[in-house]
Amino acid sequence: MYTIGEVSKMVNLPIPTLRYYDNEGLLIDTVRDSAGIRKFNDKTLESLRVIECLKKSGLQIKEIKEFMNWCSLGDKTIFQRREMFIRQKAHIEQEIKELEDALALIKFKCWYYDEALKEGSEKRVKKLDPHDMPEEIRLLFEQSHQQYKKKPIAK
Image (cartoon, rainbow, N blue to C red):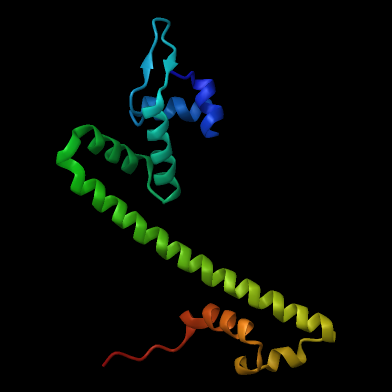
């Protein structure tokens, strides 16, 4: 068993956050000793890992609470839990794609400004056709600009 201070250090969360999670019923297997002091075990640590993952994936506390409630209901909620993770997976994959596109633009702009600084002006680099750029830079340019390509008008 672990004290709240030990768990706080282990999972890098403030003690008030752990108390809040416990009060909200999010933590599995927390107990209180005869003095009323919270004690945590390995199941509690695992529930904290899941809670933090779900928070990072964009779920709100009320949604996480619903998930933890499903866990407590056992096998009859496996489908709901699986579906929730499938939705969060799709959400994270979309966020990653958007961040990769942003990173591509940032890398392209770093190259762009490096070239402009070498020449003391943007004039030449501003007029460059993507096909006249180095292959790696052209790919970054295309990735970062793909969402702005004209889309065909639906008939």
